Image (cartoon, rainbow, N blue to C red; front, side, top):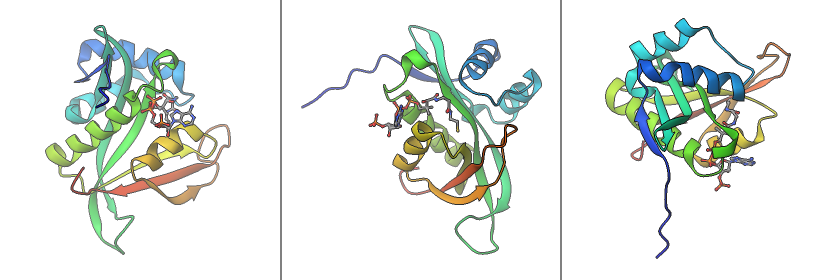
Length: 166
Ligand SMILES: CC(C)(COP(=O)(O)OP(=O)(O)OC[C@H]1O[C@@H](n2cnc3c(N)ncnc32)[C@H](O)[C@@H]1OP(=O)(O)O)[C@@H](O)C(=O)NCCC(=O)NCCS
């Protein structure tokens, strides 16, 4: 039997963690937001705003929002969609499964606490690591959003239906 040692824990984000989350967001992604944006998501969807800690220190986060919208899978049906707004793992902690665990747990919580029926997200068409991660978790490209990002880069919108595993 192979036992994989995990040196991280997944935890709900707290207000005290927000400065660190904002720092990680700025270090890892060109999509940055004002502090009130993070606070708003944390206050409204606390079960879907998670951090990963290594030795007590926050090294990664995921934050989400629940929205009502047209299903990506059933024609003209309005559903509750869990929108994964942003996820980032500090470079030195990547490729250890942290991104995967954050995604799995936030999807589980969006279903359990907020009744999400589908999940979706946007990702740069050039972001191979993230696209691979999402595909591995069962996300499919549902549309291309031309010039979605400020620098003109296109986005893939990717979506996944809630299944029995989350
Ligand atoms: C995308 C990101 C969150 C992945 O986090 P992570 O903790 O390294 O991911 P995991 O270790 O759970 O990797 C899961 C899978 O993702 C894919 N993946 C991750 N990094 C990859 C890389 N550098 N190249 C190719 N595939 C990669 C692989 O399929 C991997 O599975 P494997 O290790 O079994 O091959 C991380 O690279 C990151 O923070 N990137 C910068 C911020 C960002 O792009 N966020 C997403 C915006 S939409």
